[in-house]
Length: 125
Image (tube, rainbow, N blue to C red):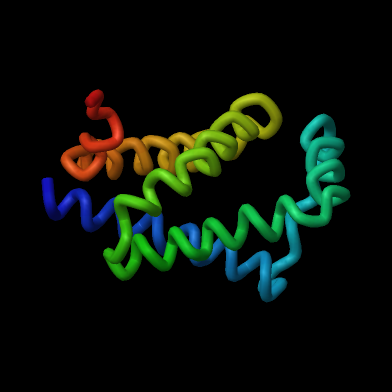
């Protein structure tokens, strides 16, 4: 279980670091979007703050996953991002759904792998 946790954590961390670095440093052009996703993406870009915020969260959590520091916190912080990645891909770009499922299930796996650290959040006094 420990080896699987390290493998999933590292793969997710590298994926988040890659996507956020690609965004911030314009390493490759964004693929052309079409249909409903294009309208959705234009709205996100028009907000001017949402993409940089999401990519900053991805970068910090990816760094946390790769280094193995603060992974308990990073799992919770990145959860809404992975949920949105899953839902956007499910409803708007189903071609990318397998990767989105992997990212979401990887996040869920890491949460359960560190479940002992979260028990205090659900304790009723």
